[in-house]
Each structure stands twice: as C-alpha cells, then as structure tokens.
Image (cartoon, rainbow, N blue to C red; front, side):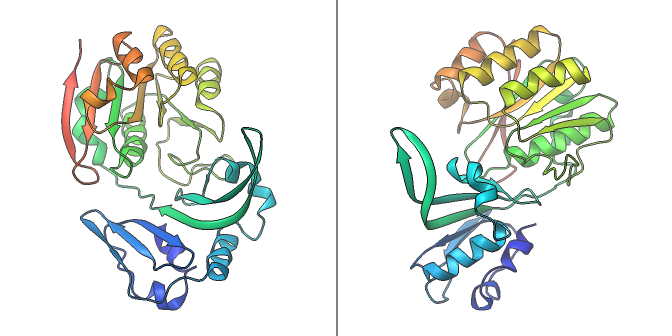
Length: 282
C-alpha cells in the first residue's frame, strides 16, 4: 500500500507523512515533497529532494530494472504490486511522433490504491440484477477505481460471474495473474491487456454476467463496450469527467450515451468516494 512507498523515501521525508486519508505523494527533483489528502494538500518542510535521491527512489520501485519496465515508462506510468499507480514525467527520446525511451526523470506522482470494502453498496440497486449498464464519472483522484474494485467484489459476492478487464493492473493489482485485492470469488481478471481486446476475449472465454473496466476513453474502448452490451453482458465502467454535462462534451462518451450503452450514470466528486449524483437515462 502507500505505506510501502513511504518506506522508500528518505527518513526526513517519511517521518513527516501522516498516512490517514493520504491520496497522492508527488516527488519533484529540486523541490519539496507534495502530499495530497482527501481534504487538501501540503508541501513538506523537509529539504528539497535531490535528483539523485529521486532516481534512487524510482529505481527501488522498479526493483532496479528500468529495462523491464520500458514499455510502461513510455506510457508515462507504471503500477506497483499493491496497485499504487506511479506517473512519471521528464525528458523523453522521440522517434518522430513515437516515444522511444525515458532519458531523464524530473518528477513522479504516486497515487494511493486502497481497498474499501462496502463502498459500492450505495450503488446496490443499479449494480445487481439486470438493471442495465453503469458508467461512473469523476475527475482524477475521486475514487473511481476504488469503487470499481469494490463493485466487482460486491457483484461477485451477490452471485454474478464477473470479468475484469484490468488494462493498467490497478483494479485487481494482479501479480502472476493472481489478484492482490479482493475482487470476489466469482471473478476472472485479464491483466495488463488493452481493454478493447480484453473485453472481447473475456466474453468468449469466461461467459461473464458482468464486465468491469476502468477509464473508457477512445473509440476502440467504446466499440468494445457496445459489443458487450449487444452480447447481453452487463458493463460497469468509468470515465474522466466532473459531471454528466462535461461527459457529454467528450466525443467518445457522448456517443456511448447517445447509443444507449449506459442506462445509469453515477458521479463522484467534491472529495474521494463522495457520490454526488446518480442518473437513470432510460
């Protein structure tokens, strides 16, 4: 968990951190450590983090093997064994419009992954049974993935066969194919595979009652969601948006809504895990 990440930090930094409600740790070369909590944030009073120290922390996270994580670093992030997602910024080597490698590391953003059992129960009516597909909307850091994780467990425990398309290894935090988080005994996970591919394979291989996936954002994802719906499989997914109105301004999400891909919309915001609104579209 995030506590394991804090153990990698210099003692002067880790001693200052209060882990309760901690959502992010941001490390920037030459600057102080920034913490974000559910109710705000702060810059630590410690010394500025040297570039050498930042690289050493990142090397520990990657188990001293940058090469093994090369593809993830090209995407600008990697996921730790406990599901914590680490965003990476710096100087990249380019080949035309394609990223070849990360040359210099300037900063990292470590987002806490938490298992909060019971947080999905507030959506019980729209998650269980044949109530229709569900789209969870929220800005980054508001708990979409945490809610999806518990939704998978909740639906599985209710007797549904659940399949998780976990492209970024964040929902289930699999290692060697085995989930680190409790996503339910009736749940199958396809890990580290593009969701547009994983959803089709899960339908064919596992015959799920429901598919769970994170961050639907492009046309391939949208096509996979629509195909699952046509196959009679319930879909519970998430997308970045601060409200239903802003979601309608995102082309892919608007097309999914207009096509009737989702019957229910749940919006999180104001603080992590807070359910601002639910809306039934048809």
